[in-house]
Length: 451
Image (cartoon, rainbow, N blue to C red; front, side, top):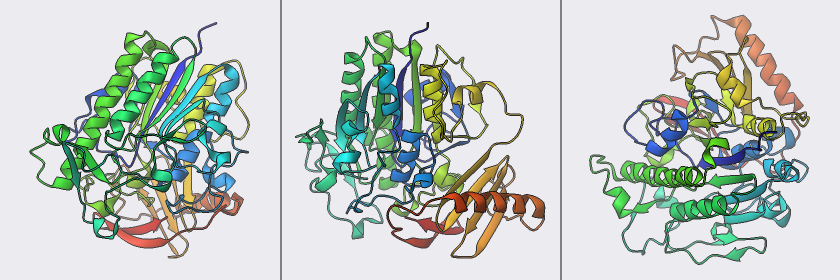
């Protein structure tokens, strides 16, 4: 029997679709992320379960659309009582442990801070990171650090310390880590490389969740200096943060190669959602360059790469729509090919998606009340219930989602409306409350923000 594959899932934080070079753009060079694409598949229509951090991560970790179990809204850093990934919903780590895997969660958690949600109680043998949605990457007073304010920072606290669930901790006992003078991106990489080295003799699962390039904008001066041609300081820092993370991913890949694990390791890279427009550093020149908190493509379509040399020959760019909820069934199919997949999973096998074109279009549905969306083939349906507004777009001819074609495609529009409403009616009540909705304009497109 073939050895069980190792698994490394790498998640960037708020990284926009255009802001890697794997799809052919050159403004943000990501040579190490591109290594994943060159040895496997780059999904150009890769989606996440929601357009905001916590909800998206709940879908990735469970293989289920999180709205199905009431994980409907983001977890605020101030805290939503009882908010977290329900213990009744197994994580990928909990499913891999009985198969003999050593597991670690490294970096941002953001799916619950109470003990019942804590990583080492959710299938992970090791944890290093923080529990909140954001934290300060490094002490701004540390030598050779660039800290760049954005246009939205007038209402934000100063970059002086980490507090609450933003404190970096480790282990089952939540021991605080005294590392405020070290750049967190590098610390996450160090821990990932160390875990991979220690777990070399048994199958391992490393969930590596970088905090970059999420606000606040901080990066070592040496990385900032590599992009003098970018005149806007916020954009320059954002790009430098991506480059620093990319270098860390290169170190992870190098470790797998030097210890002989790369061939039979599934490596998946994606972002948790799109780029947040309010800070002013997104790629708004590209249709999917911004949209966090919204159901524009730029909120849910993300960089999404898969590599498994032992199980998948290089495929190049794959246009078939896939989802982050596909990660769990993909890994379980590879780890236990003779076993039936657990019931209730919403995803499909990414390896098959890369190898074999679908005979019929895949229907993907998203939503956080009051906003819902669906994709079917090239068509995108969007609906706001509180605005009493709905649109249909052809993404092949209108990637910016500017011209609704609903009136000219009434049967298709009705079909997708019925599909979305059926899904909406099947959902349980949210486990905690909506925080806010508000109108937002992104590259001239007015849409609705849900948080």
